[in-house]
Length: 488
Image: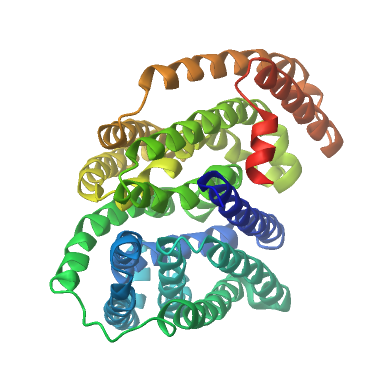
């Protein structure tokens, strides 16, 4: 099977897994928004933001570091793979125990400090959320390192699908936000157990372990964990601390509005997220084979096609945000509209970093990425502290877009130094994409005020998509036959 066919096959699997996951997450968001009031909804996602921040210390970039060496050693010395996985797993178990014991001792104090005493019960349950959530991440990232994308995608889909069933079921039984979080925990437990068993039977047990572990490999894994942890810390500052600050300054209702915006963005970023997850280990594999130019061309194609999709999508989202939020979430959540409009720019930036960031980790450039991420994340926190009290929750969205723009440009520059990209080629494609976006946006702008039902919304969006497709294909930017050939 050719490299293109392999990538197409893996992308299909990951994309379908992400589609199932994102549809499940979207349904969960919609259903919880309807059956929980804004206070309860906001409290749930404030809890998950706090727990996600704490979970950083149980993950510590261990799985990503191991995956980077798995991608390298499976081409050069496969006998070391079982040793790499076992060492990383033991290290992760130790960090999980330390973090969970610490949270058990301090969860009530933490709820008091945040100013939401009702958080205490959710944070106590969060001990299980953190433990099994960490192992779910471990399983998925390790499988990515093996380029075993199909089971990684399946496990991701199972996690989000079972979360929907468990969380909604427990909320309907009357357990409120606590029941929703328990649903998350049950899903994590299920997927962690399945994933760990799969890795053992398919990647450890069949392997010859008579070879002793290579001298210094434990130290190299631990050392590479440091920049990855720094990047993860910065990611938490970007994606979790802003929510916590909103909860502090604006309360659970503000968190609910911001969460709605972030959830919509996570829905539309699915294709690039799938593509980035699929391609990231490939960069290091091709480099190890001495084929850096092949990796560069694949990255360029992914980038220009991603921008061709996401720049018009962001423009359309800005135009239809108001009727879309009211139709899907209800008039109680119209405060999320300006937040979503600002975050549409963030969706474009995310399309670039989804393709780039993890690839840099596999290429051994985690240190440089960590430095940039650290600087922009600290700046993001500072801007949040200044802007949220001044202009409300939308200030958090402005802070995110401003700092993430800097981070995105830096990522592209770093991967350019590694792969020697054709910058002029990329810029020409971007200009053409912007022109298509302008033409597509005009009919949406003049018809958006007539949207008062789901039929009207889908009709306007469908017209926009049709215009985009016609222009993209006729201009030569989108080759339908080539895409179908790659994915078939």
